Every structure is written in structure tokens, then in C-alpha cells.
Length: 170
Length: 289
Image (tube, rainbow over all chains, first blue to last red; front, side):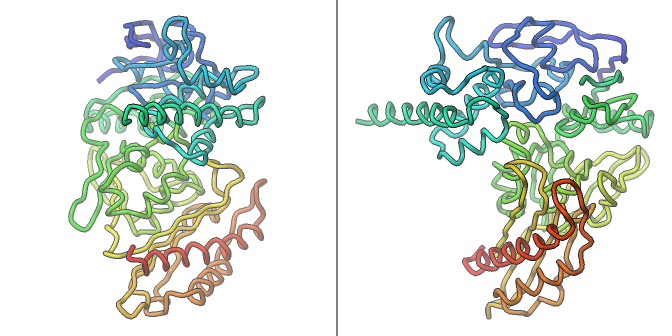
């Protein structure tokens, strides 16, 4: 059993984007605020703070979750992936590249969360239909783009992967 | 907003969780997936002295067949239930309803037990449990008990769980062979709280008449409604029966009214959505479930 008093903190150690990181957290510190202010990973955005807008979505142990509805103390020992871990050094991931090509972002506030969701979604469903993509995107709020570019970008990446596989089969 | 201060207690075993609940009682909030509790904490709608995290208790997250029942543990994630062959086989109605629960990004962490404990009137999982005649398994330091879902839910966000009790599992009666199920809801946006939801399970006799029928409504009153369908057993599984049942239900309900929908609109939804879902369940049963 672990008990952390209201005004106390405890050490939280996680693997973030492949690197071991650690910081201190009190009971009520949200995972999104831990990532930003304890670990300096400001790519994850904080929007509505009640699980609706999706801006704060990160991967915890491989699953896309709301980091505003998760407390930092809960994830000790977990593996976390944030938008900073999607690209390879300076290079964008294929999904990020597709987002740029398709104008899938404007102000960019929702983008980090959407990219994380879509990355996880394509891992679980590599050949989604447009309806499935739109259903997944219902977990995000974007006030700039009207979602259309995101749908195209995600389908582009899914289609590209399909194309590559077909080529391999030949 | 950020939550008010609380003590964080992570239970590693069921006994530890029950000891913490007996220590804090009403001052404790139980944290499973946190998809409702997290929002309520952040908005300071609740300010518990302690938050008891049950996520690391081993063996609470499964979904297993036990005789004529499917038993799902308190922390069984909605996404895992959605992907479970056991759930699809024993509780196909639940499998149909789960895609309507929140979003891809909340089902990953949200739990079946948490949704039942929270008891939102529009929630799909409580509706399915009540419709199917399922049970809620509760444990405290001094007792274990099982309550039928229809008794467990008292009103909006109100249940018969005592402050020192934990929901340890949900029990779902296994669907009869060849049963057909249907689920549908009306919401303002995909994944939003349902204005009204309807759920049905039908099984047919060899002559095509109804052998078993479950019909439930969510979002209409302050708790999920299980409609009495005894009078329809032996009736033909056709549009006449579906429409008569839905019409009777629409007359009998006392719908809530909120900024999203009036009483009259909810009553209309019971009639239209109810008949549609019953017909879809009849057709699914005719097709062999």
C-alpha cells in the first residue's frame, strides 16, 4: 500500500519516450501537469481539464488516455509516450508529415493529442474506414480545421501502409 | 480547474481497499478508471479526504464465464470488454453498447464497475446491466452481498452501495442460445451523454414467437428502466408487438427534462427508438443471434 498525505509529495519514476525520467508529485498533481512542469515536456497541451477536449491525450502503457483525468502518482513505473516521442530526432513521423501535407492543423493546440490518439488508433486498426476514423476523432475537439484534413491525413497514412504491404506481397 | 487536496491511497489488495474504506467511509472516493471521478475532482464537484486507487489490485480486471453468468471484475476496462470474446459470447448486448460509451480515448481506461458505481442516468453500461437482469457484487470488511441491478440504482448518481462497500464485480446472465440483441441511442454528438437509449434482447421459439424478451431504456428517467415484457412472451416477433411495447413504455415513463431535451421529446424517443431497437433485436434473433 502507498499513502501520500494531502500536503506531501512522492517520487514518480516513468519511462517517457524511451528514457527513464523522474520527478516529485503530490496526490492531486495531474499527469499532464507533471509532464509539463516536472519533466519539462510542454508538447502535451492542457485544455478543458475534464476529459472532453482530448488535447492532453498521451499514451500510458501503450494506450491513449486523458492525462488530465490521470494523476501522476498513479503512473509510477509506467511507460509514457508523448508527442515529443513521435518523430525521429528532427524528422516527422509519417502521420505528422501527412498532417502537414493535408493542412490537418491550424493553431495546433489540439494537435499533440490528436497525433497520439491517431498513432495508437492505427496500431490497433491499421486499415480503418473513414467512419471509424471519424468515430475515433469524436474524442477530440478542434475549433480550427473542421477535422476534414485530419481524416484525410490519417487515411493517407493507413493507405500508404497498405500500399507498401501490397508491394511487398508482389 | 485542479482538484482540492486529498490523501492518495493505493491499495495493492482487496483487503487493503476494504480497510481504507472502513477507515474513511463517506470521506473516500474510489478511483477506478477515473473518467467520471477525475472530472468531478477537477471541477471540485467532489472533495473527498481520500482517494482510494484500486487499479493495482490483482485479479479485479478480468471477464470470465462462471456457469450461467459472465462475471466482470470491477476494474475491467471498457476497451478490454469491447475486445473480449467471452463478453461477445455471453453478453452480446454489452458488446453492442460499448462503442457508445465515451470515446476511444476514454474506454482505454474507463471501467465497467466505475460506470455502474457512478450511475449516470444516461450511461450505457448500467442500462445493459439492468436490462439483462444482472447483479452488482459488493464487498465491505464485514459482509459480501449481491444486489440485482434494478435495485442497486436508486436515482441519478445514487446507488445502494454503502460508504464502506466496494463493487468487486458485475454479473451478467449469459444470453440464451440464438438470442438477438440491439442497442441504439440518440445524443447531440457522437460519444455524448445519451438523451435516450434503448436496449433489447430477444429469443424466439421454433414457431417464431417470443420465448424471451428483455427491453430497457436509459437517459429517460433518473435510473435505467427495465420494461416489464412478460405480456409479450408467446407473441409474434413482429412490428405490431414492437410498436405496442414501445407505445406502452412511452405512456408509462415519467421522463426527466433538461436543457438538451423536453419531457415530450424523450417520450417520443421512447416510442420511436424503442420500437426500432425491438424490431432490430427480433430480426437479429430470426437470423440466429
